[in-house]
Structure formats: structure tokens, C-alpha cells
Length: 107
Image (cartoon, rainbow, N blue to C red; front, side, top):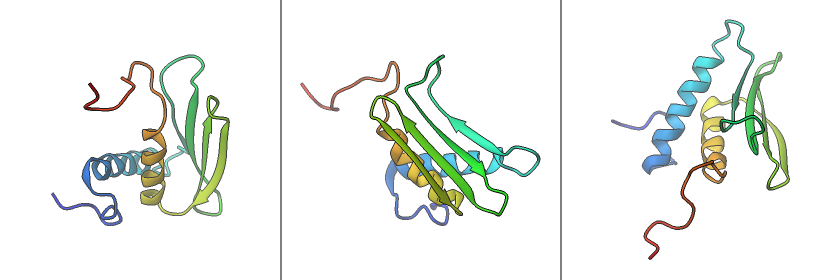
């Protein structure tokens, strides 16, 4: 299956994840009253979160927070594909409860 427009630069598994995230963001922000999407791990007090909010004048505000790393970044964007690409890379660097740590192939 050929990559979706805007995802050619990703390549590999990241391209698929980014395309799925792009589709999910677009579906969730379909204009029928949904004004934002939040991504965070399960739990009462997640260590990190990301949100995408529709701006009234067009475009989106993206907020990324990671309390364990002291990160809090707010940006704006107009392309859901660009947002999905950036969030895919950002999410890949987050700690997920239960996800193995360490390097693949380490012995």
C-alpha cells in the first residue's frame, strides 16, 4: 500500500503509525462539536499528555506535557498530517507503564 500524501518522509513502521494517528485526529475533530483530542496513558495521574485543539480562526493548537522530563510545549499548526508526524515521534520517546525498557537485541 503506498504511503498517504505527506507521509513519504517517514518511512517504515513510523509511517503507518503516523497515518493512523492522522486519521484518528481528523475523525475525532470532525467539526460536529468535537473541539479537542487528548492522548495520554491510562491512569489517574498520567506522567505525560498531548492534546490537539481546533482554533476558532482555523488551524490547531498542540500542547505536549511530560512532568517527568519537565516539558511543556504549546505550538500551532495547520496540517493534521504534520501534527500526527510530530506526535508520533514525541510519543515514541515517552515512558509507557508496562512497556519494556532497554535496547532490542541487548544480551
